[in-house]
Length: 313
Image 1 (cartoon, rainbow, N blue to C red):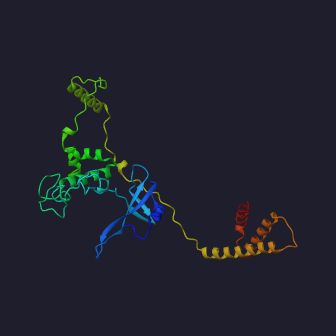
Image 2: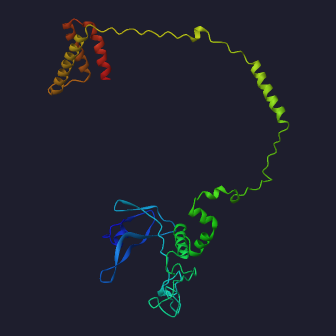
Image 3: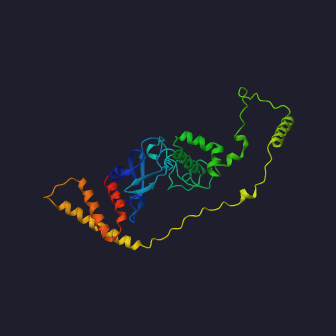
């Protein structure tokens, strides 16, 4: 449903579709006012004309998705000659027929006869009644024209086809139940295989004997020994013994970090002393060595110095 306050020109520019939009027309409904006058009221349904023979499944208007259905044209019947396919404005008949009894000598208002259908020749309904089977046929043909995108003659031929009518009215897969609708194809003569099977029982016996020979010549399968089926011993991993001096090492590490950091910052901030960067390693080694001597761990000097040397590279 498209709101009525959108104009046709606005909708033509606002529609987003995979097919090019050619024209947009809003449908209208005729109503009769209390004073007897008629008025056209816009509806929330629009007719969109696309370029090409295919209709997209949906379109987008202002970020809203709308499903597109094929537009089925209404059945047109002439009120002058009572025939289908044209309106009274384009009728070429010179005489007007009564809508009730189909007589040409009077109009419907002055008719005193019975109802008569010009197509069915019965008194059950008039020629303009929608209960007439001819009207129903015209409506179905219009539907086929919209869904199959064909003209009136082709749609009428499809409607008169009993198989098509059966598919559209009942189950569309019912045609598969009749085998006569699908005749078998002739066997090709040039694509036949030259392979022939002589004495299939003998071939099958030879295959069986060959399998038995392979089974007899194959080495016997020995049962698994108890040693192979037993579980392998899981290798024991050395237990991790906690270091009793762990806390002392952590405290000492923090002290060394502070000591080295303060020394490097002092060298960075000193502007009146210039020395190469290689002398920094020697100074740090001496600094750490002196500090380790104070703590009684002089054996770790070389290891720490080596780690500093590696990190500097």
